Image (cartoon, rainbow, N blue to C red; front, side):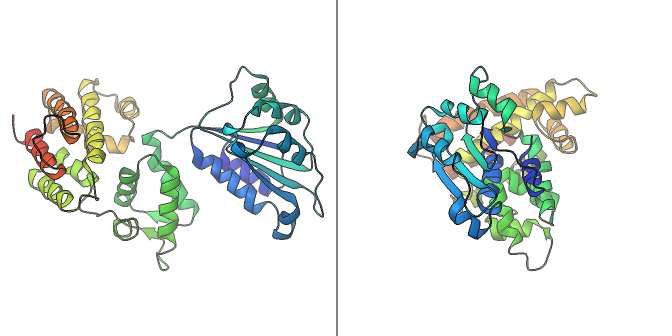
Length: 334
């Protein structure tokens, strides 16, 4: 079950006594926990009927005792157990989950992992709870997810702004959500988020960023790439070399897959390299600029300059100088 469906059902009054929220993607877990903490009970009800525990600071018996209390001046109470993965003997909650009190809504946030499927607790959760198991989104899923998040708030976003935001932040849904919230609060009546908004409110230059550097490399536009590298050199916090190199490594790694793929398999190829089909055209065009041997050479260069960035075989060049050297060797030298 998805987080949105859980919240939708609760809004409709279709509640269950136990909600177990587990897995790698904290954003969806937090989404449900925040709703449970702030939106199920009214302010007057919450004073008597909302209890919050943290796994590191509590034990299973204390949580169960709270769950077995009856609500005061309300139809139900809400008990939240945050960071349950840090609680000792968390599996002992199984006895309560097997026979929960129907007037209590227990929400458990078990972040970073899943309950061992072989345990009695896992079997009980499957049968007796609303179970949300989350996982990190693949990179090719981020654009559609971000677009839907923006749309759900009544806004839209230009394609360039979308990819600028994603390429800068990466697979951090919580931060993407926070930046979108910040922008929507500052649009002064507009409903479309542009690259100008990204530059102003997120602090990413729309002209000088890793996304534009990758585009310059893909098109073999040497002068644009050097302008961006000069900007990075003058503004070290804009794109530190340890941030730039892995992204470029990923780009050339994808080109390597493009070169090895049979023709006519666009959909499978896009899935294999973790991008959308419409974005695949950019990679196939870049593959024409760099043959398979050039791609392999550039991947080796990226490894070499990654070592230089941490002081190996580096005579004292700073990050800006190293990036410029790297661009010359990737784009100009044979």
